[in-house]
Length: 112
Image (cartoon, rainbow, N blue to C red):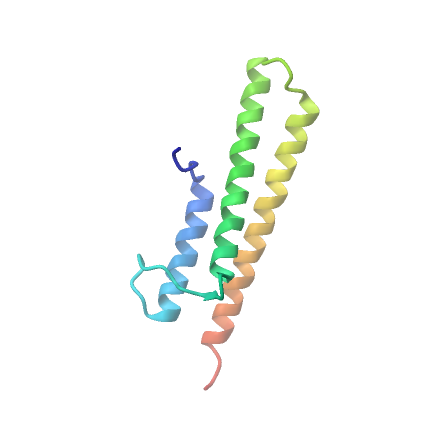
């Protein structure tokens, strides 16, 4: 089973977060930040959330294409609901990213 395709917007958000985490820990950009506590951690929760947002976007696009192709069993209201779910999830992801960037900048500007 192959990994789901990542949309360009999601990839850009992931790249920006990886660059910020590399700057925060003075790590190379390709190295993963280990922010685990116990068996799970913030980094794992964030990664799974981003994957879920991406999955919702892929599902929305697939359902829209199926509706446009006239496949039986695909109703307009299902397409609209799936599209709204993906849109709301993406907006939430952008807000989380913006707040993380703001928090990072605030911490970097603190006097020690």
